[in-house]
Amino acid sequence: MKKFTAAFALACALTVTPGAAAVEFGANDDTGKYRGADSAAYFGQMAAAGLTQNVMTLRWDPSAPMTIPDQVHLDAAIPLAQAAGVKVVFAVYGAKPTTFTGDGGTDYAFAAWAGQVARTYPAVKTFVVGNEPNQPRFWRPQFSANGRQVSAAAFGPVLAATYDALKAVDGSIKVVGVGLSPRGNDRPDASSNVSTSPVRFLRALGAWYRASGRTEPLMDALSFHPYPNANTDPLTRGYVWPNVGLANLDRLKQAIHDGFRDSGHPTVGSGLKLYLDEYGYQVDTGANDAYSGTENVPVTTEANQAWMYGQAPQLVSCDPAVESFSIFGFVDESDRGAGFQAGLVRRDGTERPSLHAFREAIATGCTGRTTRWAPAKAVVGARVTFGDASPKPAKHSAWQATATATEDAVAHLALVRVKNQAGRRCGLAKVDVVRVLQKRSAQHELVLDGEFEVRATRSPLLRLNRRELAAGCYFYALELEAAMNPERKSRFVSRVFGAGPAAKPARATSLAKAKKSARG
Image (cartoon, rainbow, N blue to C red; front, side, top):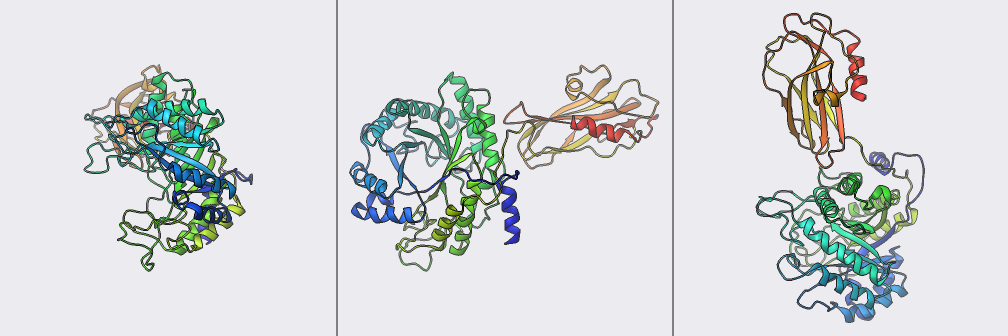
């Protein structure tokens, strides 16, 4: 308990200001759509659990371009939801992964249909447009034949046209975009599940938006599905970059900022909110005859699910960027293999311990510190190792350094000679790394340099070409540039060392000066 509390407090915030974000809690579930008169009891149970919204799915079929699926059921269910105090949200997207890329669907036809849905149901004021377009299950292709990412640029016009159509019906409609999956492999050559990571999808979507010349936004909020990587993961375990989990929301915010920077589109720093509208820990249902089939993933216990569901609402309530949080499935689906069993209610209608934990956590709200986030200006997690500053022989074979970061980056490493210090004890004044790397420094001579790829969390050895050095004083200058945003850079300078026959130890003050230079 104490260990989790410490980790939770760290994840929650870095300020001392207590408070709670105005988060709406709900469920992403179509059960209430189909229960007829029994839907009143279903929505009443949701409201009693503290849930105030229900996301319902509408899939568009271009062969019936103005047909609203399940309209009879919606006509009956929506008033019952409203009577119970549950707001209905529509999640709208194509019926097939190739709806817009092979089945004749167009962005304008889909937008016209969405507008018709909004006119038919004027009480519904929130539309989530798209569902995991970074996954092949919902959008294909993800990449072109030559490996270029294409799903984001194909999805962009759909989101843009739908935003315009919905706002034309009612300017107060909130358009929530994308519905991003938390994971993707970014491998066009993968044998299966060729998908795009959320970080790289957002970069590509932002690039499309910038190139389109559009000045209106694409969305008022961004929908994201922060499922855990495994049902057995603790709440504080996120994903490795470039994937994103509930514990990595800072990474999602940074990806939005990097993707849409200087485009005029809102980002989290300028008002864009997050809709976390699919979340869940699947549980063991083996002893319950209300289910069928065989489970195809590792699952957790009901007690562990209740623990997670008792903590997640507090975490998101501490984050002012989060506007909505929904469990995927208020009631379990029955098929273990094809369905999802992460609900607050079992398939037989009985309530799980997680329902009570979730309700209590919603009522409690934020008990930690309010999350404060600002866009990073440097490479996230950048660290460099240069080695010691002992004198080196002129034919030293290892002109190298090691660099790492928690995101992909490009490293530019240079071995630099300090002019007019040969034969003297080597020292280091303040260094302008940019001028050095651009060979514009009058005091320094760039002797060797190279460019290297640094993969997230890796620590590659950056080795320069072997070369015999003239006697003198040398240091390394290294610049790391974020792969997702070349404007974010981190710069480092090593201690000065001597090389060649006349090499002498560096002055004792050089280390402090080098550290100061690196910080600058």
